[in-house]
Length: 192
Image (cartoon, rainbow, N blue to C red; front, side):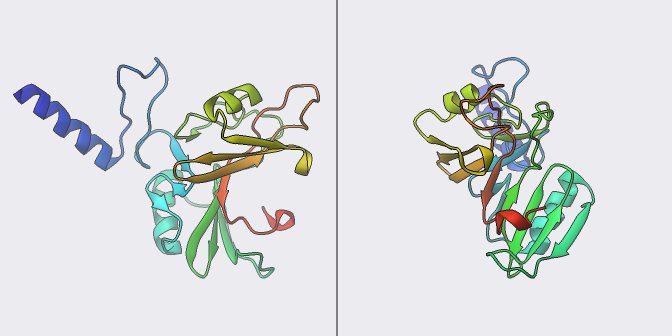
């Protein structure tokens, strides 16, 4: 009994500080992710890791800086479209409105060359994953579209995820996930 209690306390502490948690159902070489302290950047329908939409820009940028390093670009946007600023790192673009974190996107990768990148959804989707994997992970919750050259949208318990595909549906080669995004991203033409 004492051993089980110690294990339970260790798991709770690990999750609270954001480490990767492995269990018997986790296939070798993969992990469940908890927060920004893990090797993966957890992309959710309501934020990134422990950073939820609505937190202050300063808090979101500080937390993402700790995980991703210094941003490459930070700019105001004067065009409106529900976004007035963005901050860009190599792995992520964070969008802001009125000093609040309102959305994010991974860089668009039309060649799906970032398959080994550390950005992952809680269901296990990465940029570069196949269309078949996307549909399997979000079974019954994914919609595909020909818009913008091929795009996808999935409902999750924490909100909506969406993104672009590497090419249009029903074309060769088979499309793969080119980006993962959530929240307000502004107008498509103004995104970095």
